[in-house]
Length: 450
Ligand code: ADP
Ligand code: ADP
Ligand code: MG
Image (cartoon, rainbow, N blue to C red; front, side, top):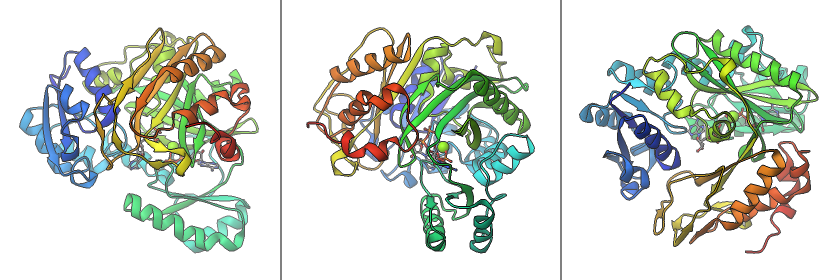
């Protein structure tokens, strides 16, 4: 096993990874920006190195500074977390050339699967069902042709996309050119890559994804699925495991996900995302990293996915065979964001005056908040995740409501009451929702007292 690991991230995921390292007896090196001198990850790691100014491009995206910090502290491996450099093939390759183990798949695999248009080509080869659309990236002219074969509505998507950005739905042919340019420009600004591809816009789907673990010896297992259908602007808000899909469809999805990973010689933890509509499932993308919502899978399987990532990267064989994986009960995660739903969800950085965290059987709060902490304005607005585990879905929903009722985070507006409104909504409770649920019911969901 590694002696020392550097965590190239911040926020709750950095804290989560540091904890896993400590439990495995691994020394930890945190890196932090000028804005994160007092951050929890900076404080709880064995060592902490400042890597630059507050803006991400000067610190958490600064590859040279991060690699130097690893070399200077003698860290043998780097865990990238999610976001930032986690799906950056150049960074993975730079680690390798400096003799540092990148905790994730090889740079070649990241490059192939991180490019969403290229990933679709590979998945077609592997026989995984795809959303109909273009074979890879398209020019405006090619896009127009695809439009006539696929039929309206279509979705224009960024090849380098992530976090729900760089996407546009086209309902009317006359808007195609304008929306094509808008998607491409947004992708260029967000990811430095303006390439786009076209997909049929599947109306009212569910988002279901499969968690995979793969070691260096071609052993691939799945840890079941997660339902991430509750979304706002293509960003997940609530995630749960298991889903309510029929058992036959789940099995087919698990098989497709394992086959997909074997086809690209995948290594480490990864997620295959699908959308499901009319009893059909379609691959949309693969995330070659740990995901925000991994704890719901941990709750129902008892597998610590971050520890497995570390073990796999250190060259160990998978600890579990597929037959060892058992699913128990139901888990739900909600993302707590420092944002103000009543003002178009605008980010709300500021000081936390009071924090009270409820506890009890099957309750987990993954966060980096503490009393008097100042949430800086430079980064993602997610400040924590509440995860609960119950006997059944209804039991888990009730446990989550009770937990959120008791959770006190004072000082800045949060989305906590908004989430409570979703948990109380009849359609959510019955499970009769699709990815458009929040959008359609927004007005009602915002009708809470502040
Ligand atoms: P998940 O699939 O784990 O739910 P999200 O799409 O919510 O992931 O993204 C997780 C985090 O990573 C978010 O903070 C998001 O803004 C960020 N992120 C996702 N993709 C990218 C990307 N390509 N570049 C930069 N940040 C990204
Ligand atoms: P990102 O990299 O931003 O996570 P994804 O390709 O995973 O992008 O898509 C994000 C979300 O957008 C999906 O969870 C789904 O809700 C919606 N989406 C993506 N592709 C389609 C599609 N072809 N039809 C309908 N909705 C889609
Ligand atoms: Mg996605």
